Length: 393
Image (tube, rainbow, N blue to C red):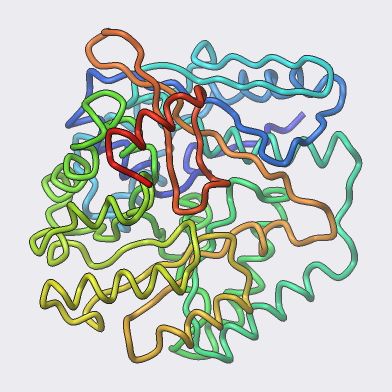
């Protein structure tokens, strides 16, 4: 049977950028990840066994010469020595634990952070694709037309957006077709439309721009291993050091945006091109960010907000209009494009739950987004500990 994941680059770009960051700056830190089934999906009998087979197949993947050359040209911020390391990297299935009890599925990944960081995206894409395959849920006849209509709406309103849909896609084939359909529309003009994809494999295959910077796990691991009061600052300082001002979209909501803004000083606000909104009420986020820039004496129209929280085309258009002439904006649209085919998409995430440095004790990690429904942690006590430490109301 053909493997679900057939390319090492079938992942999101931020895994490679974060991978480089971790490889050079935190090589002695270990991380532990776990699946969170937010939608309480019931998995069919034998699912865990099928998933384990797919994980074993992933051990055969490697970054091919043509893929390395693509990364070298498309992502000049990748260090040559890191590309050399990527050429030798192989998935190690022993880092994964899969357990199914009845219809409940548990997945854990654990290992050196610079290695284990690569499991999340392909694991989630695999879980989603084989779930729909094993349950016999087929796309409806209208899904391609719906995707075209959304792209036409975005293009017509001159809204620029990127595909962020790898993790919860219906299938590899559907994601590719959505990209092909929307590419054709976006090429009709220079403003609005598809500007790229977070999926590095499809960027290479289809000639798109790979897009992505950082995810919550940077802040979560640093908070667990080195202390939550300094996690935001450590992440930003290290990011600027690693990429010299490139990949300049910061992610502020790991421990609430309000806490992040305490550390988002004039220096950081100038060094980063903007921020990504991934939880809470987008309009409230816009006001906070604009006011913060103004307070620092920075013109908001020189900065960008990237919206990525469960967007569809109409919501992206609304937010584009809300930001117009106030602050630049862009959009990452995921599941609503790559899994709007007539089935109920899985509501799952794989997040860091613990970290340790230099083989010391494992310490719990947590995420306290602006939306409490997206708070994530293995131990509920970690939420209270972070709240107390950071003074979160």
